[in-house]
Amino acid sequence: DENDRVWITRSGFLSPSTLYVSDGDVDDLVLNASSAEGGDDLTLSLPARGPLYSLPSFFETEDLVATQRSCKSADGTVIPYFLIGKRETLERAAAAGGGDAADQPPCLVYGYGGFEIPMQAGYSASIGIGWLRRGGTFVEACIRGGGEFGPTWHQAALKGKRIKAYEDMKAVCDDVVVQKLARRGGVGIQGGSNGGLMVGNMLTHFPECFDAAVCQVPLLDMRRFHKLLAGASWMAEYGNPDEDWESWLERYSPYHQLGWRQCCADVSSLPPTLFTTSTRDDRVHPAHARKMVAKLLDLGSDKTFYYENIEGGHGGAANNEQRSFMKTLEYSFLWKMLSASDSDDDKAAKL
Image (tube, rainbow, N blue to C red; front, top):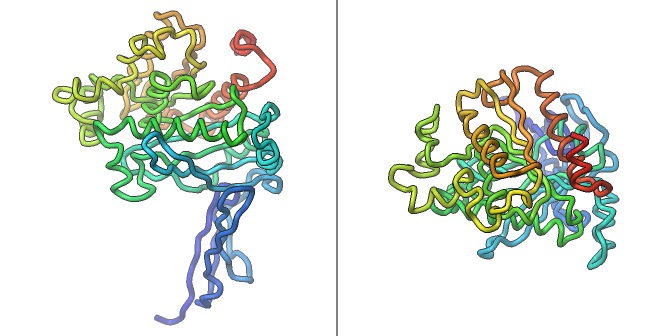
């Protein structure tokens, strides 16, 4: 009531949270949309006086670009995704056209797709230091099941319609290759918890569209999830295994699909995958990851990797030292698996 000041907090993939104040001048508060390297670059016109306060920046961003693109899923639905990488990578993609993308760096596609949780632009020091500054391209896929466009977007991949989320993820993985943003052989995927269920289904439904995966604290056994820890509280999202197993749950239970579906009958042809979990996870039982890894090994996989931290709960790490170790492990694995110079046997030997 005392003044017209407006407080603004801004954060993005390339900028940490920053606090601004405006005296209420409408001209200060205009959202501008402009094209940048083929994507939509959204920028906010902020007060000329500059920021009042900003959290520290942990990596250089001068040669990096963050854009938003989109592609069409199997049913024609437009799926947006954020793309962050070096400016020269995007310029190479534009120059390649229908040509060769052999020089493009590894591309990591991250997704979640559940519980109406949106994937939004946000600053991450670990992604910046561990992936972007190394030269990699990072993609955040806004697949159905999340909350990017409200309840309808969430409900579009609820229960028996969950395959829509995985078709969306496939569409994004395919699009970065078609657009020459990544080379075939250089696309990795990552997801945790419900996102781990997504990775498991990509492995058993669409293994041809990516080349390495990290599956974190995953949900993988959909026949028994409601009997383990907090699983019973997720039946509104996935369904009731005692009633809906044959109707739809069996089709997206990676543990049960493994070795049965034609695309994953020969596990030796599946992309290298690192499974991580925590002994003390009190939300998703570590048995999900343990059983999946054991089955892959029993079926003859030699590209399955596993790490179980004995602390950390559902976050997979108990402190910053452990978080740093886990991020280093994940990004090092993906970088080695997606490198263009080595054969699969050489990559596995390095680990």
